[in-house]
Image (tube, rainbow, N blue to C red; front, top):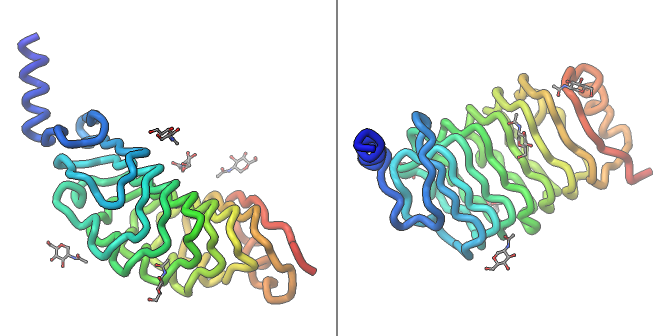
Length: 214
Ligand SMILES: *[C@@H]1O[C@H](CO)[C@@H](O)[C@H](O)[C@H]1NC(C)=O
Ligand SMILES: *[C@@H]1O[C@H](CO)[C@@H](O)[C@H](O)[C@H]1NC(C)=O
Ligand SMILES: *[C@@H]1O[C@H](CO)[C@@H](O)[C@H](O)[C@H]1NC(C)=O
Ligand SMILES: *[C@@H]1O[C@H](CO)[C@@H](O)[C@H](O)[C@H]1NC(C)=O
Ligand SMILES: *[C@@H]1O[C@H](CO)[C@@H](O)[C@H](O)[C@H]1NC(C)=O
């Protein structure tokens, strides 16, 4: 008993305390804190304990991810998992993900008004292994958007408004194993020939897309 209260005191000291967090934090030793703040009408980051390992912000009301918003000492050293699904994100400012370069899992799905991916959005996230962008309204992904994602293993782009994808976007992702593209209004013309050549060489698994035209 003494040992367990000593241990929790030690954890509170080293990992910070969770007094102001939406739901009680769960320490995941030695990784860090699991912070869950889902469905709380949040529009900005709540106060966080130190050493956050997993941050769940699903089902909130974030509309803009602002420059440097995750660039905080509580997050930068450890954050591996970030969920922002089911928000209302329409804009991701340059360097919004600055600092959290240990991130491996990012869920940006179900932000129904997210239309574009800008070139530098994911550039700080070179450790990313799993990226979900499903059920948004993405119709355009700018050149070089996945340029630093050489560790990405799973990319979910299904259920968006993409009519094609430029192979130059896919090429840097040399570790890719799963690519989901179903549920897009794909246009099957010679423009996508390069894409089919890429698929031919791709050794992972791909789902979709099926053609909407011609
Ligand atoms: C969010 O919370 C409200 C009540 O506060 C509840 O009615 C709703 O079902 C919750 N939504 C989710 C996705 O958990
Ligand atoms: C991130 O934080 C560091 C240290 O506080 C600072 O020097 C840097 O300018 C910040 N970058 C951004 C994009 O906010
Ligand atoms: C992409 O960049 C443009 C121009 O800087 C900006 O207007 C737009 O909101 C950005 N897209 C997202 C999803 O942030
Ligand atoms: C990636 O995320 C999806 C959806 O959250 C999950 O089902 C899957 O297990 C994750 N994959 C890896 C390799 O962690
Ligand atoms: C790809 O799919 C095949 C057959 O469904 C499965 O055996 C294999 O494990 C999958 N590979 C990956 C990387 O998920």
